[in-house]
Amino acid sequence: MNPAQQSKIGAWIAFILGALYFIVPLIGTFEFSLRLKRDEYSFEAYRVVLTDPNFLSSFGYSTLMALITIVIGVVLVVPTAYWIQLRLPKLRPLVEFITLLPLVMPAIIIVFGYLRLYNSSSWIPLTANARSTDLLLAFSYVTLALPYMYRAVETGMRAIDVRTLTEAGEILGAGMPTILMKVIFPNVRVAILSGAFLTFAIVIGEFTMASLLNRPAFGPYLQLIGANRAYEPSALAIIAFLVTWACMGLINVVGSAKQTKRA
Amino acid sequence: MAFLQISDVRKQFAQNVVVKGFDLGIEQGEFISLLGPSGCGKTTVLRMVAGFEDPTAGRIIIDGKDVTPLRPNQRNVGMVFQAYALFPNMTVADNVAFGLKVAKRPDAEIKARVAEMLEMIKLPHLADRYPYQCSGGQQQRVALARALAHKPKVLLLDEPLSALDAKIRVSLREEIRALQRELGITTIFVTHDQEEALSMSDRIVVMNEGRVDQVGSPFEIYNNPATKFVASFVGTLSILKGKVLDPSARRIQIGQHEIVAGRGAINARPGEECTIALRPEAAKLANGQALNGHNKVGGTIEDVHFLGSVVRIKVRVQDNAIALDTFNDPSAVPPERGAPVTVSFTPADVLVLEGA
Image 1 (cartoon, rainbow over the protein chains, first blue to last red):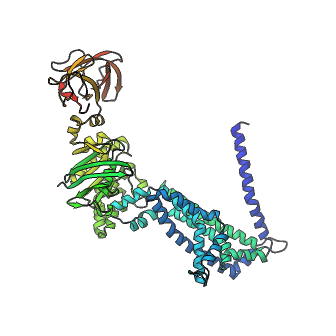
Image 2: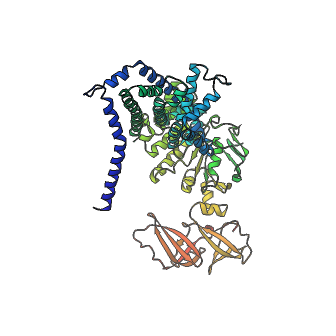
Image 3: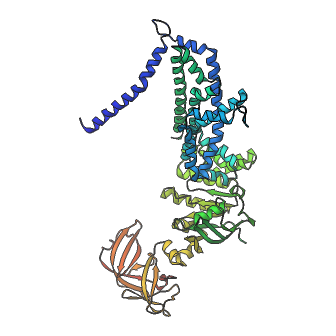
């Protein structure tokens, strides 16, 4: 056996071991979720979960929060990334550092900071009622998703010649808002969608912030079911997994559709 | 005052002065090339006219209006970029229509103007294609149509041909020049390619280290370079070191040979060194039989380069090398390396360089 073949076999072994590490627990969870009825496999646990009004309301709430988070994130990140790329490239390391902070700072610290700053007796009492707490939760989700959203958009911006396209727009008489809406946004659409789907996946399963801010989100619902039921949590885990992977799949579909169009 | 007046413009980035006192008046309908090596400041001048860079000092006036403080979108200037800069998300027609839509022209007018522009660049059949579906040459023609669609007062071309292959470059430069003449639009063309500048321009501005070295017609720039830099940058040139024998009779010694220099001021005194320039097309192989009144120097063939229609021969004359071009003659064998030859040229072909 020559060294090239040996290295190929080594690569396959590493791949199979890695795949088993991820797939075996998943298969185990799925198999367990089918065992609600004694002595037979069934989707009973899924039926129970999907007909639970709390599932629908918490999933609906988290979906709405995810959409709000995406809108705020896009409005915040796209102009920032654009401006950094165009006029303030020296600030890029600083902005990258700030956007990476949520990855190294545990969510529980962030949320306790929020509770201290925005409690009902503070100057900005965002936790005083349910609607303003929802807003605070959306802002905290924006913070959590910031590393993914910024990186996705920034990569998209780097893939196009932002400076020259902006100058081309300017010399043709367009102002900055027109250039952003007509030229830049459409050309980083795929990058924005990638960031949006990642944000969606993060928000759907998030527990800490929603729980500590006492909002009826899908994450706390998952935890509640997990604490009180046996088979339904496994079904929920598989559902959450499928939702996340559907988001990832959509990123790939949209991305490859765009690439095919450009090929 | 000229239609486009650039008055004493200076540009400094931190401690680096990129453009040092640039003065130029461009008449309406004139085609001007800014020619120079990389880093000479030509693109910075163009970007200041476009409004992408603010001059550190000086003024830019277009059609009697001081545009120095205006944003690029307020100057009514068209520009074609080196990398095309077509909007990837728009079709060819939408790209051409962009400036008109921004100006909120009526739909019917936009449609008619886009059709007219696409007809002008001979690409009406590509209206619905996206830029990535067009070749480099087609994209650059679309970029030209887009730059002209909103009827700008000045057209700026920032090395628009440098990303294209040689054949398309030649045909497109002819198309650009023909269009410019037809529309009579005042144009500034930035290039480092002397052939492009010589073949397209009414006047050429040769720039070096942020300064204008010479402004003149292609004929003047090529045949009467004002400085050593212009002489060496524009066209191929043999630069020869010599010694002045008699300034009044314009006699100069090259190696062991005495020649007469017909052009350029001789400021050096007898015995002092001087530099002379000779174009390759002016020098000829005389085979020892130079015509009366012609300069004649002997040397040996150092190199022979076959360039297709032309054969470039390099002749070593002691410390100097003279390049000479001869037309390719299939019936004549090019001379061998090391063969002794005599090179002849008229006194009028010999230019004494300023500051030598």
